[in-house]
Image (cartoon, rainbow, N blue to C red; front, side, top):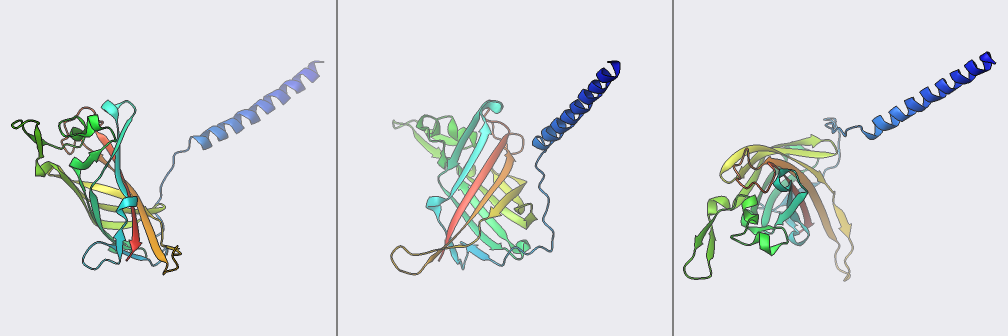
Amino acid sequence: MKTKTTGRTLMYVAASAILLTSSALFISSCNKEDVIDPLPTNISTGTDMVDIGGTAPTWTIDKTHSNVGWETFYFGSNALLTGRFNNFGVTLHFDQENPENTTISSWVQLSTFNTGEPGRDAAGKCGPGYMGVVFDVDTNPTPDVYTVQPASDTAWFNSTSTERFGSGYVARGTLNFKGVEAPIDLYFEYAGVHEYASTTGGAPTYKTGFSGQFDMKAQSVFGVTSTSIADLVKVKLNVNAKKI
């Protein structure tokens, strides 16, 4: 009887050990952090060339289907505040085969800040302060007239280098925001060129797209004084374009 009990106990111990090991492997696989590794330098991903804007563009931005958005935690620790900018532009030379030749110059007009809530977005309200927009107020005549101080109204990103990275690319460059310049890494992916048949029987159209994101320290680096946002602000870009 003692022998049977011992054998059964050993069987339970072995089964428990297998179960614990399996659970540990499952938990570790679920909790594994995503790691983005640079692609090999000799990889060839295509030979597309896309020129948006500039002096001899072959593509034009489809602004209706493009956007520049941002997100940050409300008061630094609550749910996300999100918004977009209504006015923006980009000049892009993208060389898929030789990404080191890629250049990006883009801008947003900060006073076109838009969260979809008029009580927050209008001049004189709290919203524009999230992005550091400064207004001069003329209280005579009534109603008040708000004039944007030009130095606070535009942010620029200009790349200095581009390389393949992870599943896409990283453009390293400088963000000029509120007159302060700081280095920024813009991570982006390329959607490729796609052909679409004409619905009217004419020539086909060609479209492409880019999606990217960078992080900025709005308060500690760029001097935004609003306490309604966190220091970390994520800026997300989606640029669709069509061939001229």
